[in-house]
Length: 296
Image (cartoon, rainbow, N blue to C red):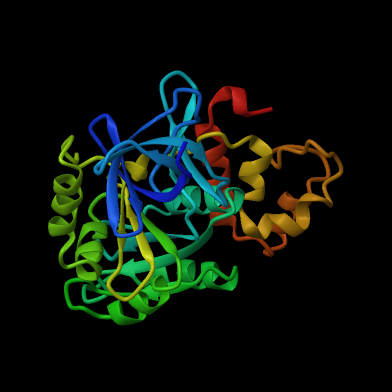
C-alpha cells in the first residue's frame, strides 16, 4: 500500500469532497467509519487515480464550528478556524443579540472573535458607539470598513494573512461584498475547483476554503448565519459572556443559573454597573432560546 498523503479539505462537491494535496485537487470519498469531514479539516488520504482519492483518517482539529441539525443533533460546519469575524453594519440595524450569540460560541470553541463594522460610509445612530466601546473594553478587536468604498480593507487583508478566518453576521450586512473585495476572482476559483475535480457541481450553500492573495485562508460558508447555540450548555452560555467569567466562581452555588439564584455574583455585578445591563438582558434572552435539554 502506498504512503498516505496529507491534504486540506477545501469544498464539498455533490457527494464528493475536494481535497487539496500540494498543487493538486482530488475528489475524494470517505471511509464510512470516519466522523463528518468538513471544510478546513486536515486529512490523510490514499490516491486511487490521477483525479481521485479516499480519505482514510481525520487529523486532530484545533477548533470546530457546529450548527443544529435534525432532531436536537449538532453537526460540524468548518474546522481549524483561528478567528470568526462577526460582521455588522450601519444598516440593517445591528442585531446585538445575534452578535452576542456568535461571541458566546467563539468563547467556548477555542476560536478568537473580532468585530467588523461595515458600511461606515453610511450614517448611523450615535447609540451604537457606547455598545462598540463596551466590546472593545472586553478586548474584542473592532475593525471599521466599507467594502463599497474600499475603506479599511487593506488593514483587514493584513490581519487575515496570518490565519484561517470566517465571516459571520446577519443577512444584508455585506459579508459577500467583503469577501469579493478580498477575493476579486472568487467565482473563477470556485469554478476552477469544480472543473479540476470534474465531478459534482459546487453549490452556493456549501462551505468553501479560499487562499487569499495576500496570504491566509478564508472559509466562506453562506449557511453559517444559523449555527445557533448548538451544543452549548447553560453554564457554557454564561461563560461565553467574557465579562461574566471573573464573577462566575464567586456565586454562592456552583450550579448558579445567574437568573434568580441567591447570592449570584454575576447579578450583583450587573447591579453595581460592572457588567452592562444590556448585555445581561441579552444573556437572559439567549438562555430562553436554548433547547430545554441544555438548560438546568
